[in-house]
Length: 425
Image (cartoon, rainbow, N blue to C red; front, side, top):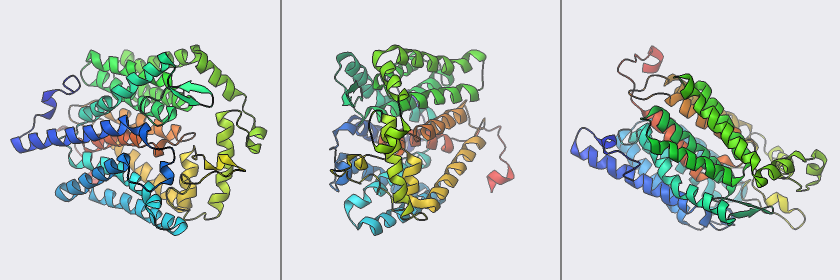
């Protein structure tokens, strides 16, 4: 911890706030660390259970802290209330579809906990600066990344369709890949824009190797897009702008150079639409295409309001069709089925508002550089990853992204920045 956090990061104007700052950061960092470290400890059927496990306890602690801070500080109360209302409405739709139970409420509670992270950071803005939030992601990811590399070397990772792939402590190699992609981006930003400390470059390298070890194709594609966006949007010298491009190129080359990486790419290249239509699992893309096909009739049963949050994740396979029990592997289709056209449009509208707020932050944050490119990169990566994975179902990924995004939105403006009339209003 001493290596990651500088004491000057917590210097504040008064002993009470200084102590509270340290307590808040330490508590949230510890909970995030435990959550990431135990992600793969949940039972395989946890989505079909209403039992109170460790991940649920941590989610409830996040929610409790967020409520306390929101009542105390009242920053961002309106967007927080609107977001919570959206989750609440489509949780009630799920109750109407499947009946009231802790299993039905599970997804609503999980999504509220992601919102809670953002509320905590936004209201405790003096504690969770952008550099501190980025370092919390580093701290949470170090052991999973080291373990993923060890699993690669010892061939002790997770068996996924006959391939041994590293997952660190995350539930699946795909979810690990996206978490590591966020950690690489945060580490690169810290290195390039927050002091050029050599250990930040080492962290970026560690997370990049761990990402390769997952052999996740959708994770690789998402990471490459993130690096291209980060490099393209950054201000600064040509050398600084080219660093993300170089990192992306190196990761792609190494991925293709490994036997399993090239094998996975070759396997996906054999995808057949006719095979996918029959439900054959000759490739992961075949499986995804078939699952998406089976979800469309579910949406047609309730196209406007959907079937409620979590209803696609608790579906169980049948002896005649085991693939129906798979997760959606596409967040756009999942939300369309679960929240209908109305809920999905509201969700996309909220996303556009978020992007607009991020863009308006550009070059207006005191003492920080390239924070808007950092957040746009994270959002773009999640949106790309969501095309073929369960990005927003992976709590550690969502927590890491929410932590950094909220820190940027809450960061104080530069004294030289004059807000427009619209911003004041």
